[in-house]
Image (cartoon, rainbow, N blue to C red; front, side):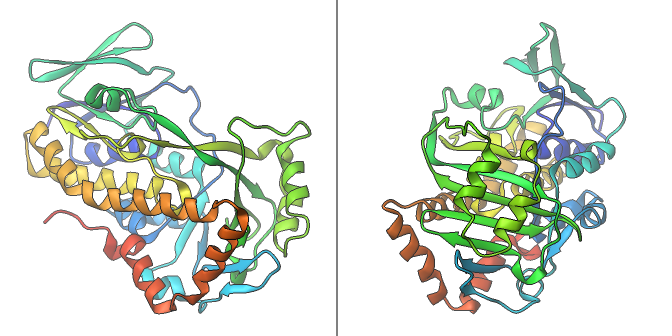
Amino acid sequence: MSQQILIVGAGIAGLSAAVALQRLGLTVTVVEEKADTSAGAGISIWPNALAALDELGLGDAVRASGGRVTAGAVRWRDGTWLRRPSADRMVRALGEPLVVTRRAELTEILACALTAGTVRAGVGAREIATAGRGVRVTLSDGSTSEAAAVIGADGVGSVVARHLNGPLRHRYAGYTAWRGIAALGLDPELAGQTLGAGTEVGHVPLGPDHTYWFATERTAEGGATPDGELHYLQRKYRDWAEPIPSLLAATAPDAVLRNDLYDRDQVRVWSRGPVTLVGDAAHPMRPHLGQGGCQGLEDAAILARFVARSGDLPAAFARFAQFRRARVRALVRESMLIGRVVNLRPAVLSALASRATVLIPEAVVGRHLASVAARSAFVLPE
């Protein structure tokens, strides 16, 4: 195939889509408005996404890049175990361990799999118009680019999604997330989450000597702490059970990321003619299932499979959108529900709901987890 495809956005979904399509022999260009896309802390790559990466020939490189989680425990803030599964729970339920790597390392693995010069950094899309059987894109530097097809991988604020759907509202979800990497190893038994009333802290190994952590709390939009985000978190969680205080103490203050969380209207149109969406541009979701980037990787592998089966890109895009819609919509709804439970007000309701998770049988939890994130949950079209 020799058709030119323009991908807007060089995040996980955009880069992985480019890798998948170049493997089919297509000519691909990726434009990315940010000059530097290396920012970020850690990311969880669940077995469903590892299966997608295997389709791209990159699964083993990602497995070798980070730490592994085999159990996934849940405790209360005082150290009480809410769920203490067997050490090989993830392997039995999901087919292999969850891998945790640095986001920058994942994007580097993807970018290095591309032909040199594929990515044009510092250039974004401004306007999109179909032109005959192709697409004309006006770029931020004033130039235009013509392609047989355009794939929108430009995140929650996607220009391509708005081209297909018109205005898409953003709404503050009501809570904020902090993320960081601690220069401290983590006992594998403690990998998982620690919960409190109206807040949570996640902590997973990032290799033998580092730990990726995140925290969420219901708070006002646009907030900031005058003496630094790390100092605020250290005060908030100083009485929590280990490893929380030690992880925060081992984190560099300038490496803590704070991001308000937003919901965006779900798109009505994923694909029209030679234009389609992948990743957060198509289906942004809250972070509680750890599936945002993972679903972008699934998108890339599945989109390439449909393209490989059809020389007609608009038809392939339409079949891709139809195939993917049901799975990702269910994950968007579930991640939103979990966020609402963790951040219920008054906080006592959040505490009661969170502690009640201990009543769910482990077998039920395992089956549901497998339906979301097992290798078998990644399904290619037949």
